[in-house]
Image (cartoon, rainbow, N blue to C red; front, side):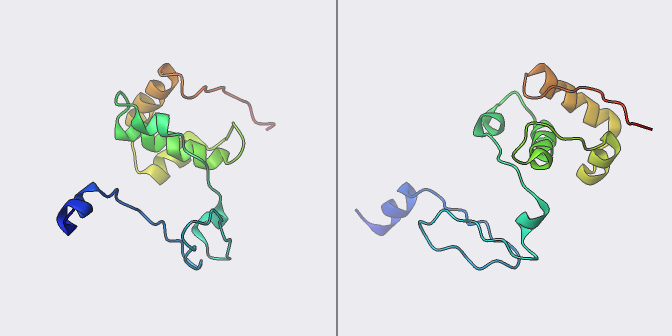
Length: 117
């Protein structure tokens, strides 16, 4: 097989580079934490099912990814709507539209809670 055909058949590899962390060795599944590491602020594991759902627009996927990152290794999180809109740079009406879509699709459940104030 010539070189061009070999290159066409290869999958694209994406390396996620993290600030302050040395590059991981090939074949090792480890995460190194450093003071200035991207992951030091927290992270979440994102299911491929959500990312591959063709019924979900990019805005809904971004909101879902944001919520998963806040939840981390738990199933709940409590960021305010104002904070999410600000950090995702999205208007409240647009945010609500795609949050509702995530609820209707069964990916999230929203429960209103009261502050102790």
